[in-house]
Amino acid sequence: MTTTADRPVGARFGTEDTPEEAAFRAEARAFFEGVSERRTDRDETGNYFAMADNDPETHRRHVERNRDAQRRIADAGWAGFCVPEEYGGRGGERWQERIFRQEQARFTIDTGLFAVCLGMVLPTILAHGTEEQKRRHIPSMLQGGEIWCQLFSEPGAGSDLAGLTTRAVRDGDEFVVNGQKVWNSGAHHADYGALIARTDVDVPKHRGITYFLVDMRLPGVEVRPLRQATGVAHFNEVFLTDVRIPADCVLGEVNGGWGVAQTMLMNERNVIGSGGMGVGFGDYLRMARELGVTDDPTIRQALAAAFIRAQAAARAGRQPGPETSVGKLVASLHSAANGDLGLQIQGAGGMLAGPDAFRRGMFQQMFVGQWGMRIGGGTEQIQRNVIGERVLGLPGEPRPDKTLPFKDLPQNG
Image (cartoon, rainbow, N blue to C red; front, side, top):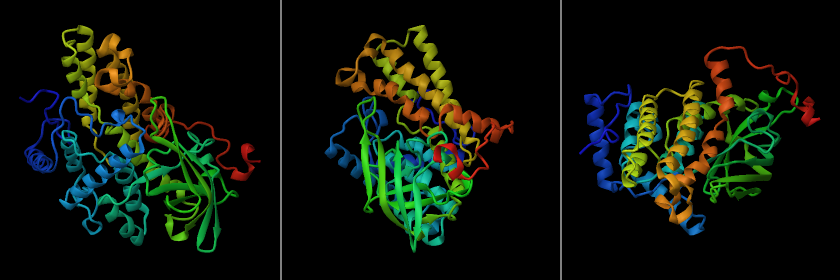
């Protein structure tokens, strides 16, 4: 029996499937039924908040499962819906990818480690890369051969990302990079990193930045995991000491990396705003039923609000632009509200944590870990600024440092 929570939502308009969408959904579901198993109510495979084990062997198996899953998807012709066929993609449309991901969420096959690679880096290379860079990386990405991380934020450059101080100095056919990055999701698994570094201090801060495609196995790259409040270490800090990066690994133009970075940031907000953390409305509904609290009017109202949020999120599906800040902001608020909801449904049991808690504390992990989503990809305050200035056209905040050479800024004097 299909419940309201399980009913397909049309990928393009938030209504039920059109005949074209329904046919495509059936095809995608048949594929997953042939290569995977359906999730059960208690199955947490691939859930970001259930991945609470720091054991290296557990993580190694997790990486291998993700690589194998992505390889099987690609071999069957289901990878890269919006990627041209000459680079190994399907050459399809965005609504097809959305339906495919909706169906994948019903099964245990997990490709979450490729969110940065396929959702953020790949479209950036597609938009700004040379033909050689596209052919070097994109087919391998789609086949599960490359896991990527983002090397943007620094201890002194988070919301003010253009204030970064990691330096890249030209030396013949290479750039020598020194600096530190932080809050790098998945860097401990990554084969490559998308790095922005300062290549010119004599121009304003936004104009002296270059974007690099970095092999994380190069000498001088050191990754240190950061243990979070949840007890796990999804984030890392990365130290770069005399790392020599070939000049043909520059994406876009030297000193033109800020525009390239904006492409990636818009795709990041699109990825976060469209969900993908593995916890959906159905999880909350099943938990409420299992705990016998579905007749509680307060819980019913909270579930109704969560259902409305889920339906509103399903209406998204645009090409990434500044409007993706709306989706990212909504996802942040959604994460905060759902973090509260997960504990509210459990009542006093919500105060437990660890293996003794409901679903081994998955919802407690979500409550404590919500700040990773709310801060990652730009804080809620940053998203409101982007929406106000770049979407609504409101006057921008005063930025007295916008025209000064980077070397003349007070913190760099």
